[in-house]
Length: 154
Image (cartoon, rainbow, N blue to C red; front, side, top):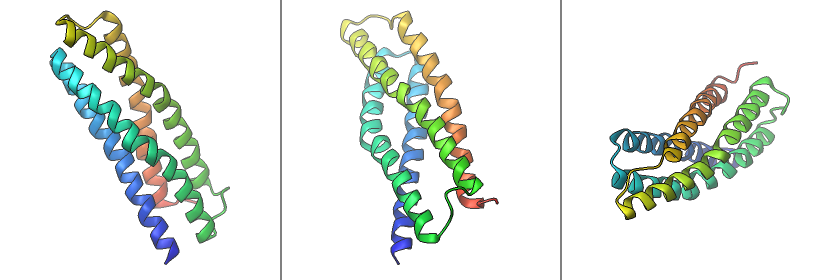
């Protein structure tokens, strides 16, 4: 019963982690494509909040519940599917940490432009391109992790 409870928490947190990431990326990307400074300011404000509320908390819950499930199930941490999952999780985290800072900068630049009724500065668009570039490998890493968790290849 303990295993099923931890597994439920692990799956729920992975859903929130991946879903929030994908949803935030979707809205942030298309708000930026619109080039509507006010829309970008509002969306980027809520993306930063969602990152702290959902992504940060579930990013901690995921490895804690994952390692505990492996312990309860008797899976060795040297199993290839676990090792690759951990490596990919670290890759995704390495992409996400600078993204957090970038999103805060994007939020602040957009808020200032909306407040001053000006266009977004060139620095905004440079940061946005970096944000997209970091999001792609993080997304691919998470899709691969999902595959490893389901398939558990030897």
